[in-house]
Amino acid sequence: MTAPAQENAHIPRIFQLDSHRSRFVYFFLALVVVLAVRMLENTVHEYAHVAFVLISGGTVVGSPLVTPFGGLTWWDDVPATWLPAVNIAGTLVSAAVMLAIFLPVYLKAKRPWARWIGYWGACVVPVNTVFYWFMAPFLANKLNYDPIAFAANVGISPAWIVGVIAAVPFFVAAWWMVKGTRLVRANILLDPKQFHVFCLVLYYILSFGFPVVSYLNLLDRFVFW
Image (cartoon, rainbow, N blue to C red):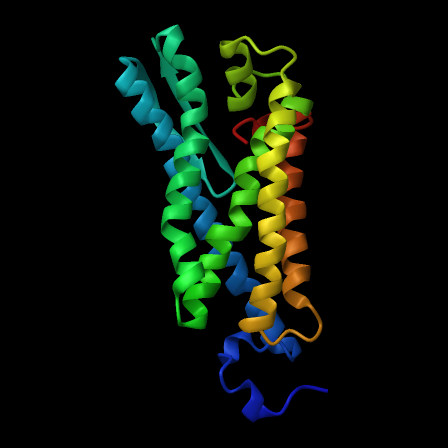
């Protein structure tokens, strides 16, 4: 049984997930939004690498590869003292930019759709941002992954020490995401069957699963994750 229509008047129809049709539409809407937000994050990530390479006096080889699932930037002639900064710049700059854009929207927006978009950028995607530095050092060994290269360039051995350190912000981000999800479901969505949670779990399965496949060298064509 759903709540009376007048009680749901403050909830936009697109966020009333009380029918098969509304859940179907919501699934694809959420997919488009989260992929767009991830594309923005990965674009900032790769071009932050570019900026630090150029600042260091190095050379960017070709154009960065950017997808909603990750990217890759090629560089040359970067001084050794600059390599750690180049390695970590992508994640630090992208995290700062994403929070600067989306956190105020999530916290202060009055319109439900705006706050919902802010939630994806400020609560959901940051988990992926830190997951890279948390999980890659435990599973990967190639220097084309930022955390592995950072560990090597700083002299941290074994590399999984970086993963242990990154576990702290990762679990903070995960806690923040859970808290944000509860608020979104309580204040923005009508979601009696917890369909949003299903979408979120599916998203994380895919967005964590593909990189892990790459970290384990199970499918070399995905090396850009």
